[in-house]
Image (cartoon, rainbow, N blue to C red; front, side, top):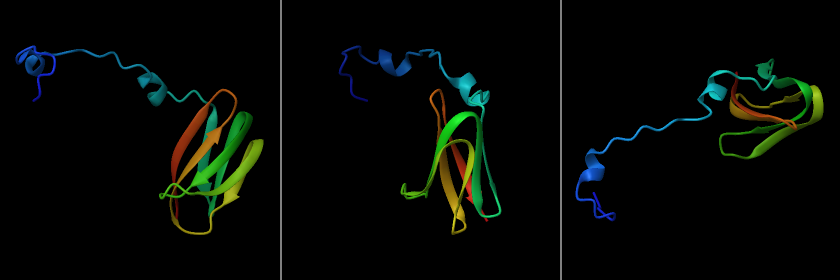
Length: 99
């Protein structure tokens, strides 16, 4: 390893404890945004007006839904997609499989 700090091997054996913030948010979803797939479409619902964008695995936006309390978009092909639902206070990205 490169010793740019001139601490002579200390950094390789030194241990540090990091407090990870946000892990509770990853485990306890409090966004009140629900996303699911059914019959070739991706649906969302929220307690506030939200918009949804759907991306394929290449990162290209393939569909979007205008802001509403709930909505859906049809997906033409089977595959894996990312659905991003955003409102004024939260954002949720969900991996969705269309069969």
